[in-house]
Image (tube, rainbow, N blue to C red; front, side):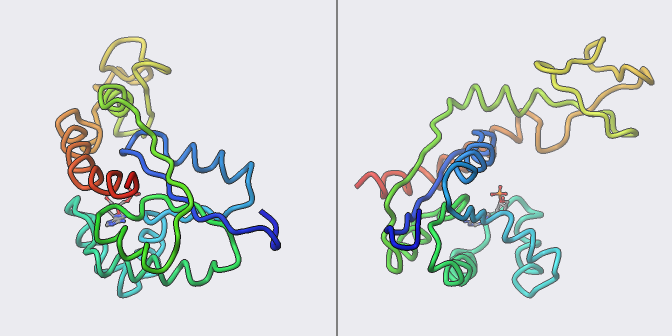
Length: 189
Ligand code: AMP
């Protein structure tokens, strides 16, 4: 979008494993807009050891969301540096108070929702197995080991990351559904 055109304010939504990152990078490759990921922004703050980064780590390590006031301040501060760009927000807003706070400052033009069935996401996320000693990664669907559950080279057992275990994946998806369904309804209005 050129400087003379109107700037696009877009939000992309989708559960963990829905392919939000992949779709966002395809969109930004074809259109001139800035991709702002709240997860990346938080990880960057954690790496730099900023006050927000230190605080964020305590929540992220427990699998919890960052408090709305902190997250909103961080996201809006970042958006202030992008007033001359079209942007695509990824991961923010994740709750109703965040969506309302964003709305007070910007008019959102479009919301993309990746509606992938939970069963498909669960299959995708739980298909990954790793050999912990070497870091070799297998995928049951695309790159399976010769023998189920066994590393090809060492014959040692493969494990699943805590995050990728079916019970954890279901928990993450349920949390997403509970927190984000109201945001989708808000935008539908
Ligand atoms: P993500 O990379 O989008 O999965 O984000 C990683 C973690 O950062 C999440 O599990 C949350 O703890 C935190 N986070 C990211 N975006 C938000 C947000 N909009 N509100 C609260 N916490 C967030």
